[in-house]
Image 1 (cartoon, rainbow, N blue to C red):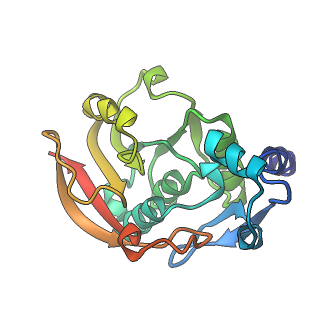
Image 2 (image 1 turned 120 degrees about the vertical axis):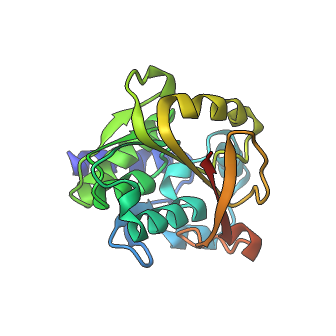
Length: 218
């Protein structure tokens, strides 16, 4: 199944960037690997059609973004946050946070993402790391409650902000990581940590976007 998934994901990626390909990438500081876009693809300029396709349907799932990586590293450094618990990862992308939670000892982990290809990437990455996840295409389809809800890189889009009010109805504890919003204010959350990580493959982002703010439910 994993080989078939990778073929499908490669085809989806090539439909956006003509010569793009997924490769297995070892992540820094943690015992997890992901299928991510080959960094060699990023060495050339994209043609106008590729640029437009990237803008229309960005394949977020083929990168391990700084916020997700920092959150995953933090979870593995603090396994008591998830050990034996029910966890859901919203906007899972590559699945890095969900996989870290499972590796840290979570009892049940759901990777949730609206993007079908992202969920397929989560499946492929779970198989790669020999970890078991469950999957959901929409947070509002979830009928069960969770102990912990994680969300990385959601605050950049104002359309996602109303979701925050429902997060605390879904889980007892909510943890949000974001590298774009440094001093986000919300009545239900408080900033508790600053973490640091680089997106993989490296996009040569300014250092400020490698500094990840962590907000937790009050």
